[in-house]
Length: 143
Length: 63
Image 1 (cartoon, rainbow over the protein chains, first blue to last red):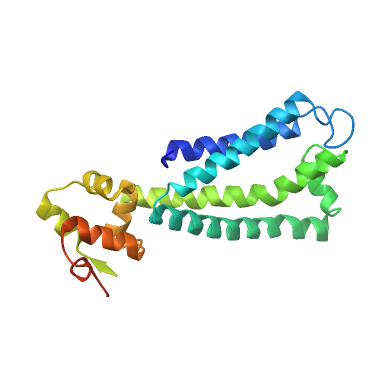
Image 2: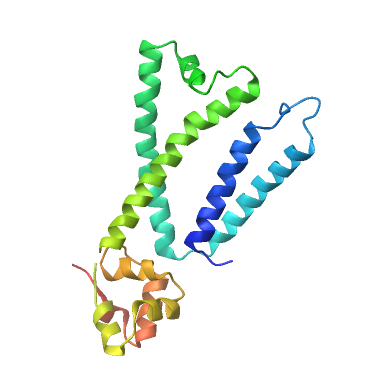
């Protein structure tokens, strides 16, 4: 599979859809019903997404890899700054991390806390990456 | 790092897309190299020189 922008966004979308879909699963991660058909299906989709992304990454050229690493680096720095901007005020002036969890319509089960943890950590990183990527693309189009 | 890819490409009358295809890289990547926004790794640099049939130092030079 050759690298293309469409493939890249397809895989990103697939991974994000799997994360969101995992949140919507009716059963807990452990215990009765954990190995339901949707859980196995979504798990399989995530594995497929990771595998396809690995193949796609292998087919990228040097410059695309350099750009992607650079975008992730600066996007993560941006995301980390945003995260500090949210977490520190929440801990200092709010009711701590529970107030952040409350933002996600109240996490009550371990599964929901797990989802909140993923989203609070990975969400800003992913958004930061997206911003840096779009900024770079805009500069490329202008040049 | 400076490069003469644009000049060499014009001499051969190749478009960016054509040269990118010969090098098996994305056109955007070639554009970034041409404009000095990205530096290619040594293997790609040697491939670029080989496509034009010149030495690496005839394509790339230090600022």
